[in-house]
Every structure is written in structure tokens, then in C-alpha cells.
Image (cartoon, rainbow over all chains, first blue to last red; front, side, top):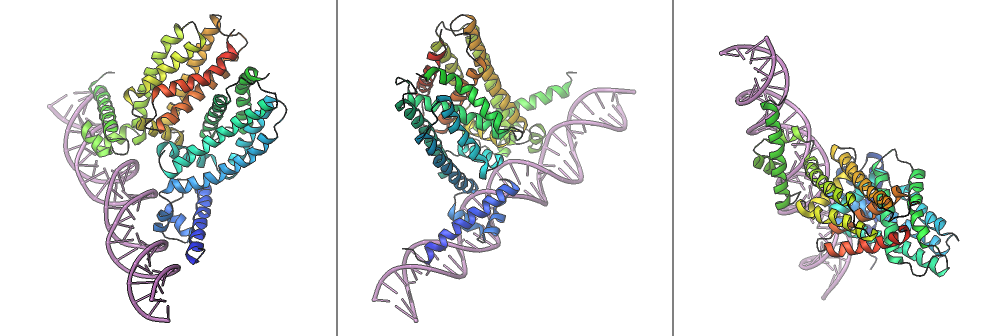
Length: 204
Length: 204
DNA sequence: CTCAATTTTAGAATTGGTTCAAGTTTTCTC
DNA sequence: GAGAAAACTTGAACCAATTCTAAAATTGAG
């Protein structure tokens, strides 16, 4: 089943994503006109809408790639966490945050977040919510791992704690991308300060 | 300085907000055409753009009214909190959540949140961030009050704790408005469960 | 009352995302 | 390898927000 059509389709997908990623970064999300993306990808406007429901979904595809990389990177920390609860959390949070601005600009994040709340039932909206869920689960998995290692009390509600940590971090990240002048080190130390309260509550 | 002109201006503001609020609720944000809002408010399209920079700012003005009401309602709890830390938090959270859907539909919230992240520097974007800040401060004020009453440990970092609680609640609220079928009781109990972890960490 | 400044108005023009009817290309069948 | 069906591509047309323009209305000062 890998006829010409399949190959061309995959190739067009790739070209559209690459063109969009480049233009989004250069001109910003709004500045990157569909017409320009189509021209750069060497397809017609109609083809773009054949592949993606709307402009937001193109950005969504790019964001998904990015977040999946972050999830992969996080796996390393969960498998082999620092032997200190605070450091373990900080390391995982650090990976999420540092990675996140590697391919996506703050402006792209703002748009992506906005679209995911605006159209929660669109393909991207659902994918974004699922990605948030995966990140939350990964944090919960870290908690579980730390419990298994005897570093966190057994009676801690891991699921609720994972949600709490993710929700707080995510909200901080949202505020962070809203302010262009905000810097990563300050973001991380603010989150560390907030998590400290939790850490004291859960260490054995 | 309260000439006829001033009064008429205030009146047009009010008519625009009322018309928009009604149409947003009836037809949804996108469904409410500027033309229709103008007609219902008995002003011209140009006048609307003279009063508000764009459609989002109209929604922003409505949201601001709403959140300020919520802040007022919250003041009562801060001044006179239940004598149990968990209940105190739950009561305040409850007021925020229950009030929030009084005038604004979930769809209006989604749009408002999206716009505030999309355009953080617009008048509404800044106002929204400021409102979030006020809510956070109010939660911190409650913590301080509980400390003063001897219900919360003195060495607790009230500011960080307030942020943590607000960020988590806000994120939960965002997810809540993203799903039309989500219900308030479940939202509140999920937040209660998350806050329980914090409560155990901070009660004397 | 009159005039100048300000505001409102209607509507035309612009803009950019999205849709759609018509035309092409690829695949399948014999 | 010819013809038909299916899938895909195309770009012109559509729609609603926003901007712009020139005329009309309103107000406050003198």
C-alpha cells in the first residue's frame, strides 16, 4: 500500500509542516498567511485545508511533535530520578521548561494554548488536552517511583499530587509565555518555591 | 464635568455591553456578529470600534465585571472564614466557581481565556492578568487570616501557597469550561482532593 | 444663538481564513 | 494499456472583522 499517492501525501504533509514552522517562527502565527504557507510548501490553499481542518491545526501538529519530544526526555528522569524529592521534581520540571522553547517561540505557544481552549473539540484541541494528561501522568509516575524508592510517604495521593504539580507548573508556564521579557531561571525558581511546600508535606 | 456628553457616552457603553452580553449568551461569541451587537445597542459599527479596540475587548469588559463581583463575594469569606482550614479553602473556591457561571457561559469563558493568552498586551489581556493576580492575592489573604487565627502554621510561605492553590484551581477551571458536559460538583470535589494534600502540610 | 470641535453615522473598501465546484491525477479492473 | 472510479488539487468566491471616509449630528463656549 505504499503507492505513489501515499508517498506524495506524506511528502505534502511534511512540506506543509516545514513551511509553516519556518513562517510561524519568522513572521509569527498571524503574520504567516495561509497563502504564503501554501506557496512555500508548493501546494495550493485548498490542499492545506484538505490536510488540516484550519490554520490552528497546522500549529497543533507542530506543537504535538514538540511535546512528544518533551515526554520522551522526561522518561529518563522518571526512570532514574535524583535521590532527593525536591531535586527530582525540579529536574523534571526543568526538562519540560527548557525543552519547550527549543522549537516553539513564546508567540507560538500563546497561540497554541489559545486555540486549544477556544476549540477544545477540534483535532488539535483534543490532542492538546491529551498531551497535558500525559504530562500529568508522567509527574504522577515520578511520584510513584519516588514512593517505590521509599523517598515519599506511601499514604500520599499520587494522582492528586501529580495534578497539583502539573496544574501549577502549567499555569506558571502560561504566564511565562504571556510576558516576552520573562526569563526561564526566574520561572524555575518560582516553581521550586511553590513545590517546596508540597515537598515538606510528602517526604518520609 | 457630568455634561450630557458624558452621560450619553456612559449610556452607549452600557448599551453595547448589555447587547453583547445577551447576544454572546444566545448565539455564542463567534455567532454574535458585530453588526448585530451594533443594531441591538442602537449604535453604529463605527461607534463600537470607537469604544472598544476589537470584539474581544467587549467580551473582556463583561468578564471584568463578573470577576470583580467574584472578588467582592470572596471578601466575605476572607473576613470571616470557617474555623477549619479545608473548609475555608473549599468555601472560597466554591464562591469563585459557583459565581463564575452566573453571567458567563462556558463558551464565553473559553473565548475570554483564549483572547487573554493570545493578546496579553491588549487592554483586556492586561486586565485579565491583573484579575488573576487579585484572585491569587485574595487566596493568600485567606491564608494570612488563617495564620492570624492560629489555624495555619506560622512558617508557611503564604505567597507561594496562594499561587499554588490559585494556579491549580484556575487550571482545573480551564479544563472544566473546555468540556461542556463537566459539572460543578465534580470540579469542586476534585479540587478539594488536591487541596487536601496542602491542608495536611499546613495545619498546626 | 452661533460656531468650532468632537462624535457618530452609514457604507464602501480591505483583509485573510475558509469553502466549494470544477478540473486533474492516480489507481483499479479487465 | 484503455476506461472508469476514486481521490486529490486548484483557485476563485464567500464571509465577517476591521479600517477608512466623508457627511451629518451633537455639544459646550462665548
